[in-house]
Image (cartoon, rainbow, N blue to C red):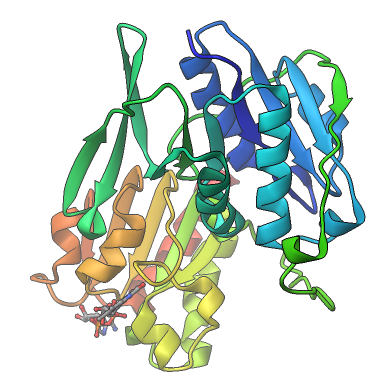
Length: 320
Ligand code: FAD
């Protein structure tokens, strides 16, 4: 059984992030009945973590962490862990998680294992499984020490059931000027009615084949019918058809939804790197030899401008 397993709790406008609930599932598997502590830094309601199935919630509040900066948050997380006895630290492989986790590992002097998509326990020892080389190979990693920092890919594990009402313990961390090398002047959150791409259960993505920005309307039709997030290939982003925040792939976002529909995407290795762990992949492409069909569970050889509206209609009918 591990010492206390720590989970960095992330929040969004809706509350505790789904990814954090998934990280809690991994934490409980490692803890094997032992303690799992949630770490809340700055704004964010610790009560949400207290009810999410943890033994204790550690909170770090200070002017230095009122707004997110990786340096200060890493110090806060590492400080909370040090104050309560170092153990494994688990963080979601989100944009902030990817940034903050290596800094936490460096501060605690621990190994860093990024982007874990699966794990097994073998006689009390944990083995992490993670795709490497843009998903071309799978690496099995066993930490050689009891403590380490791990990031967990969103949607790779189920949500933890939660429950309970754990005690909340403030932890004092002393910050100095050197801890914040940048000052956040303002934060402009983009408002979207669609699910967040990295946490979405369903994603409909468009490639450069949509032809122009308005071409994404057919992608959105299917996304609206499903309640899905909209993704894109880098070629579509580079062509200026859609904002970079939608890009899926090696230099975009990594996603792992239940269903990924690729409309007019060839399936380049760099795109697959970001979505190949999707549970079900559906590809629509005019070229029967497009590489995406090798990764797809279901394929339609056809014109996306004909297939997508028909797909949207059928989804609406099925949901009615
Ligand atoms: P294309 O490869 O041009 O494919 C278009 C597809 O649409 C074709 O298969 C064609 O048959 C099909 N098609 C055409 N018309 C229709 C129609 N009417 N209906 C249906 N199908 C149609 N790419 C990413 O996506 N994400 C990344 O993060 C990323 N990172 C990269 C990093 C590096 C370092 C490099 C070198 C490249 C990266 N790329 C990335 C680019 C990648 O190599 C591909 O160029 C890109 O994914 C291709 O996008 P696409 O599938 O939209 O375009």
